[in-house]
Length: 539
Image (cartoon, rainbow, N blue to C red; front, side, top):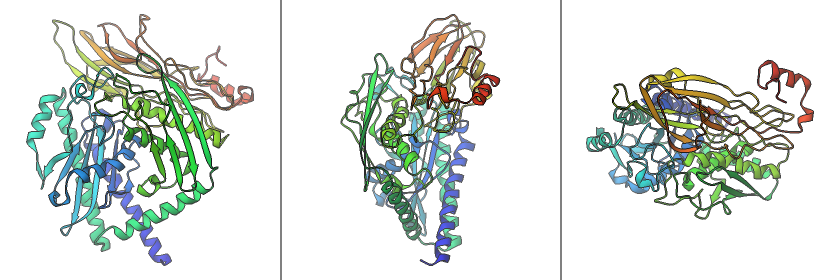
């Protein structure tokens, strides 16, 4: 290929990325749920006619992007090519064929140019409610957790399936938000399709075959080079998490070979009877993300880069099978990067960050008037983040959603969705693990229903009994705490009640420290004190 041709291909590749970015921004701008429009809990991408991901939007989470990369193939297996038409949009929330739990809606749309299938667009978003028990760990099977939508057509030839819409409205607590998000997802794919066709017509492309081969070949060459430079062998790691009613052990063995990297979750505890199980499609998504952070963070994420990673597991809590309850699959899914990185740290000492808070501290609040009173009912969802682990050479980031990458919802947006008040949301001093480099801080959040209201909440928290470990001599992060303002201790998982007039206080966990604490510089400790990252009595 000539230099001019290669430059032209690179420009088209960049143009393709801008297409999927606009696709994702459409979803952000039109979504009804705060989890999407405020937190970016979504994904968007473009795929070739064989279902291979060409490009993903930067906006989005690894759990959505990497599961979506596999989910498109499931859609293609379920919907024959001869029944695909221009203007179609397909949908599912099947946990095992989509993104791991019922709250995520995945939509796939074929893209046609002059009657020929040239691409697929796919997107995913978390909706506020899917009926059933609501967003929580208390279900005993997936059948209790909400409405299940098999892979089917949301629209055919541009005509929406209003029977599906009516079924949705009859099964969810926030029908306007949920149905609105369905239309937002469909619009997201439609914008991607329009921009792609405009691009292809402008450039004179009849298909994406040549561009796809350019993308995949360059990606493969870069990945081969990176993996070749890694040490070869097998390394294992295990970590213990809170679980629901008893601790859960997660285990992984990482094997690096010239042909790629394998992760095996053998040794992980069996499936739980509670809704904390994780389908393998989601465990795989975060295992691949962790590996890519180490091996090739600067190489684009597409089918060619993901092909170098293989994830396997016997049936266990990281490879839960139907009909296991999986509503809180994100908790252990978000722990998978710490698990995998702990194994990689043995192969690459001095290069891997310490453990962090890991799982988002999601909370679903169901607020209502007190008995006999009048007022507003609402379902409110908040995403909250603890501290990241310290990095070799850098302190951990505070109140940061690693590995999920979602944004924290602004207080104003959260209060607008229901009759609650967030009295406090601030960094939690002394919560980061000590070390040459300090772990990131957690945060303190104080929530109360407005006068005349009470609420139930679904706790989806971890690292309450098992804080994040430090690395290379760094200290552990401080564990999380869930309590009421009168001192009543609450459970880290499950639906619980907060009476009118009481406040719920969440103290999120901090990240582990990195390196010998005695080596932390005097200037760094002075800075910690001046910014009140540590108290006067703190280290």
